[in-house]
Length: 402
View 1 (cartoon, rainbow, N blue to C red):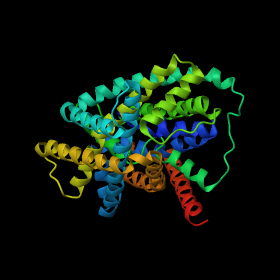
View 2: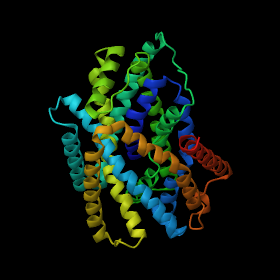
View 3: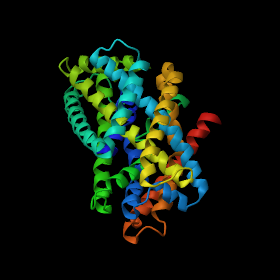
View 4: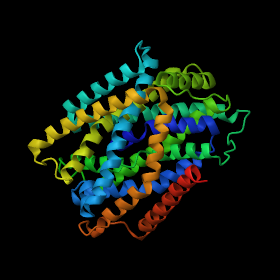
């Protein structure tokens, strides 16, 4: 539930919807392919934590301090950028739905601080309960909205699969869509931290259960990404409307265009689903990133790992993430989509490195043989790392050399 809550956010509501609005269903194959290639990357994180009782960061440490530093830098950048971006989109949806007469920045900061207070007080169990409610709610709403859009799509006069010329701009756009699909790469570390938090209750973090839970969340996030693509294609593509680059403006255009196409009855449904999607993501990552960063600092020997110090470390890192995200928002508020594109492109370029690191960790000598990947999954992982590497290098070549 937490993985699905964290995954179905900006990558779905913003990037998948933009892909559908711009090119219809054409980029659906890209979304499926990227989710397929990244599956081992996240699966190994779940297996490792459940099998060893260690964070994925500890596994990185077993492979050398350089790998810990590399992943720490990537995780810190993604933490601040993701919390800032998700806060801004959530604020836009909340402003539109509740007709709030305050700025995007003020709304985002208010929601962010309230969420930080909630996870600080409620801890893991309350977080898991909240995430479960939100995931069920937004999944039902999105599936209903998508089903309602299918008859409209069938009657559309324009092409459902638009041409996608391989220009530099289109390549950058496709890379931005793929970058956080279905979620940012460092969420694998959050996943391992959540499994360890759940392990506080005996018998709840076996490899089989962790793997089943992960598979359900991963499949749900992939299906919902395609749902947002369909919604964007139905409501916006044939009308040739470009989604604006601001939080509340984005929310208003998305909801209004969908209501115009499917029917005014869907306006509140779509808005509520979108808000539930974004707030569940914010709730999950505001908790997950401080946990993840604490694992890195502990591995680097900068903080104590005693039970008494864990709570203090968590609260301090939570405050740092919130403050850094607030500062980030102040600088990137006027270039919302450009900011999201930049961060997701960086995530796409880093994907092969994270995939290889997680493969090395799950095959470490400290992992029980029964929890290591079999021949088929190893081959899948090898092909995925190679494909992601070729894609990243190709993007860099065409973007900066050709």
